[in-house]
Image (cartoon, rainbow, N blue to C red; front, side, top):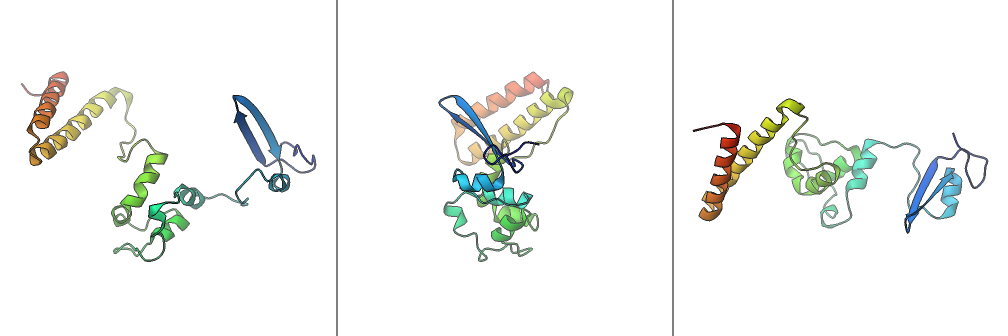
Amino acid sequence: MMLCEKCNKRMATVHLTKIINNKKSEMHLCQECAKESGEFEFTFQPSFGFQNLISDLFEPGPFTVGIGERNRCSVCGMSLADFKQTGRLGCGHCYEVYAQQLLPILHRVQKGQEHIGKVPHRAGEHLKDKRRMERLRAQLQEAIAKEEYERAAEIRDELRRLERQMGIGG
């Protein structure tokens, strides 16, 4: 435990690290001295919960305008404001209803928007290749549907190379 560097009376619970022009400086303050310093533009809360994290991930912008009670999930009745407050969606349908608002958050907290889970190292390469083939097949169907035949041919050739590499087909 460390005492506040300013008052030397209370325990330091706020630890500030600044890096300016590649020079690092650290301050360790109690909440009272941190509030008085005026360095911080946030309010101190005695406890931190998952809902605080979720709430903080919503950036001010076009999608926060409709965050009120108007837009609700037709299945469970959950609103985006409810999600922001609790950090939990009401049902699986909420993911579809609030996809536009959730995607930017997911991009910030994880690598992509598709859950791939953990894969054992030995099986990992084969599974990655299988998933890549699935994506390529979907892209191929999409290119054909859009009548983008040159792109479809490129995707088909890439699929064939991957199949040969994996020892699939003839």
